[in-house]
Structures are given as structure tokens and as C-alpha cells.
Image (tube, rainbow, N blue to C red; front, side):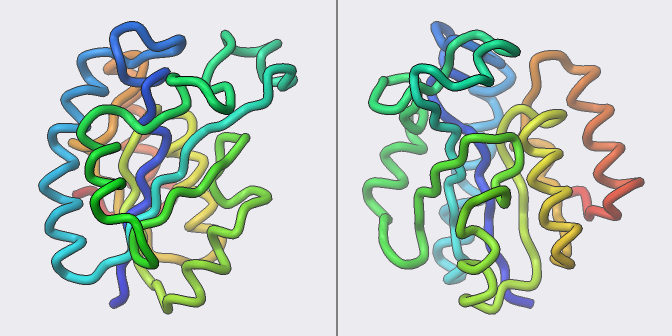
Length: 178
């Protein structure tokens, strides 16, 4: 088994108290839970990908959601200690990938990057569980990766949305819940 960690949307606008579309305290708790996983994954030579939402100022998505993660703003940056982790480990095995939709596979090089590294299993963590994490887990499932949902390192806008999405990943995507 060759593993990759997909860290979805753990950026300031989705996690910080002042973020435009924040999960707040649950997102901050997910970051704390995730860091030891990432240190362990790095030590095991796993691929670590930070899939971050980035939008142009006139993105049509802003008709559906408040303005968030605008390119070049603080809101689009990795949150807190994750930014420090990325900056100190950046390289071939720790990569930042920009995305502009819910699914980190859609119109990105994620699949080709995973295939080039021989990845068979993806561990999904991040925010929001029911939106971008679920869409990315679905993208992985449809491309025949074994999906692992790291539930304690995910957060959502509500506890019910989080719990429902984790159950959906387990029941529909046959994800292993970590």
C-alpha cells in the first residue's frame, strides 16, 4: 500500500475565527488532531498534498457562498501550524495544490500526481466534511483509490453535517473511517 494524505481546504477563511466561511472551533480542533498524523505520514515517506480553495475576485461561486479564499489574500493561506508544517517540509512529497471547486480532482493534476507516485490509498482530512472533503473522497473513490476518512481531522459548519458526511463516506464510498 502506497499512501497519500489529502488535506482539504485547511485555510484561514475556513478555520480562523475571523474567516469568511469558518468552521471555527471544530476546524481548529481538526488542525490540532491532524498535525501528529502529518508528522507520522512524513516520517513514513507518505505523499502529503494540501488541496486549497483559491478563487479569482469575480468567481461565479460567490453567487452561492460568501466571498472567500480570494487569490493573494490571507484567507486563502494555509491556517496556522499547517502553514508552518508546509513551509518547513515543502518538496516533492509535500505539495500545495490549488483548486477552485469542491472536488480536489476536478481540473487539477491531483490524479496524475498520485499515479506518478504509485498511490493506492488516500487519507482525506480537512473542511468542510460534507462539502469539499466528501467531494474529494468521492473523486478518489471514482478513480479507484482506497479511501480513508480521518474523521477526527475533519470539521464542518455543523456537527450534524459532519456526522452525516462521515457516515456517507463509510456507507456509500466504502471508506475506512480512521
